[in-house]
Length: 285
Image 1 (spheres, rainbow, N blue to C red):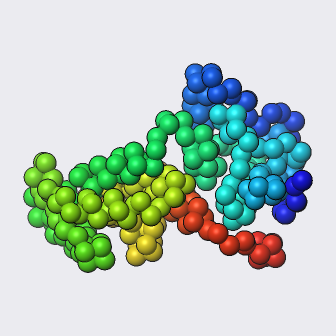
Image 2 (image 1 turned 90 degrees about the vertical axis):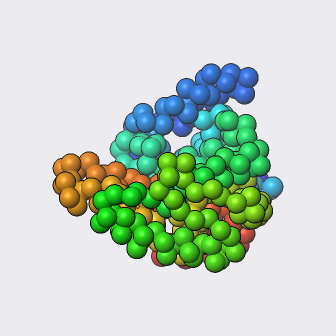
């Protein structure tokens, strides 16, 4: 038995299957479904709603059709907040579905299907590898103005995370980067173990966007805003733009997309940890 919680209105389109069901034993077809994220399709539903199953999970409904993952699984969110966020993404689509703009949906699909079949421990190890090549740890030694800029902008956040987690990271202009102490890696590994599988999926996504464990944790811990973190991750590029100019709209678009992906990843982490039910009236305001 399901309980209707939210109903979102949208324009009427063609009635099509929301996702081609992919049998689990046909991994190639699953890969094709995941690779179709850049393909745009006409909106095939009028209304979006969420419902709760007896097991406590939340589902997203497109008209009377239940949303499914690219791998063919029933789409289920761990809590009401996540389900509402995903439903909002689907409802915000216009005449054409732009799957590549639905970052929360994509992250949920990744957590549900786990197409690479990784464990949380493997995800933690992959995330920590970025610490060895962290954006804020690699410094240039020329020109002096960029050296000074990196010092002024990156050192404060680096000192913040070292003090907050009682670790040593450092920075270097050597091509090999700074040598990260084993104790630092162990501390962060222990910290990341506190994340559940879904939250770790989101955190790793943010880390890969910013190419920085330091900046990603800064965002998740609310020490940095998304805008600040993105600017810090693009510091050298912004420096070059200042001196050599922008490439018409390209750089602005890249910056916007990076902010959107980073914000979605950070929101996903927090929603994955959300255990309380959001009041229905608050979502309707």
